[in-house]
Amino acid sequence: MVRVLHTSDWQIGKLFGQFDADDAAILADARFQVVERLADAAAAHRVDMVLVAGDVFDAQTVTDRTVHRLFNAMGGYGGPWVLIPGNHDAALSESVWTRAARLNAIPRHVHVCLAPQPLVLREQGVAILPAPLTQRNTYTDLTEWFAGADTAPGLLRIGMAHGSVQGILAEDIDSPNPIGTGRARQARLDYLALGDWHGSRQIDDRTWYSGTPETDRFRGNTSGQALLVELEGPGAAPAVTPLATGAYRWRTESLRMQVPSDIEHAVLRLESLGAKDVVQLDCAGQVDLDGYRRLQRAIGQARGATRALLADLSALTLRPTDHDIEGLQADGYLGEVIAALRGRQDGPDSQIARDALALLAGILDRRAGLQDAAAQPVPAEGTP
Image 1 (spheres, rainbow, N blue to C red):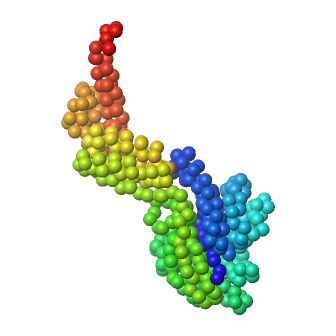
Image 2 (tube, helix red, strand yellow; image 1 turned 90 degrees about the horizontal axis):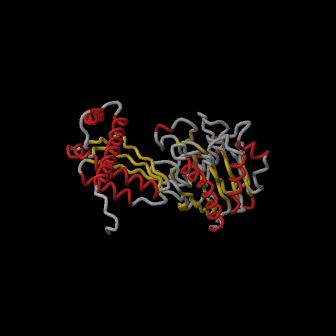
Image 3 (cartoon, rainbow, N blue to C red; image 1 turned 180 degrees about the horizontal axis):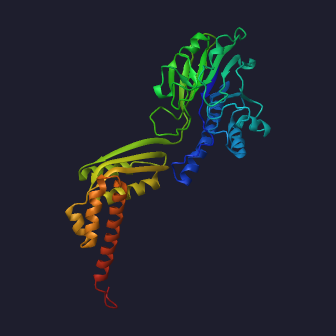
């Protein structure tokens, strides 16, 4: 039996620019850490090789330090690693791969397939048929040559490609880097290891996307996994087992506020988030001033409890009640400003109006608190 660990889309060097700098740095570092876990898993399961089906790096312009860190992270498994370039790290005439070679960063047991030609691993009894991308986008099927490739009898035939299986995945990604449906059967492959789709997905009995091993976007696509593939021999159907590898849970929380009890529910949802959560929070509906304050406090506390939290309150309307306005003790010009801000929440400047109203309410709250404190009698000396 031959055991293979199939992974892809490491996106080493990804910047995560939508997050604060501290959070972005930790999420970027998590991609090195997951490679270390993949190496440990490969050693623990005694696999015969690790296949990385493209987009090892997120960009051609990653630093030399990043290149060295990546190959050092693979050190926990000493067997063969087989890598192909994807659309983010295509095998251009001058690329991250040619730079890695000049840096002498690639260990001897790591095979980078830069050309469409078989890689024979005789000790493992496997012939790898790679379809590396040599440019970011191609509109021809680079796996077509698999069918005509001769390999020695008795060797397992394993294909590797990075792209979109036509007619299977979402229509909006079915144009660049196409892969023909039924390629594994047509090319007599025992297994076809695919990358590009960031979630784990079976295409047919011999064709799988592994997905990225560390989730990197807010999409429910079964990411954060690698695939353990067991092959009994040529012609036998592979047994595929997903292995959990990701550290962080990326989740979208959608909260709709209409009545006061919705705030209670929102606060409880936010309190349930933990240190491994990366959260996109979308809030819609309407709240009064007290509810808005409570929601803002809960979001601030959740930001401290989670790995990262992005909050979008653009669809949330702040509707101060008459009691809220009275409590602000705003009259004259300030009362007119508050009324104007309340009316502008449905216009093109709704976010600015909402933020300004909340800011003004906070200032008035603090002013009222200071006035109340000043009005308190000062205890006489010696009074307990």
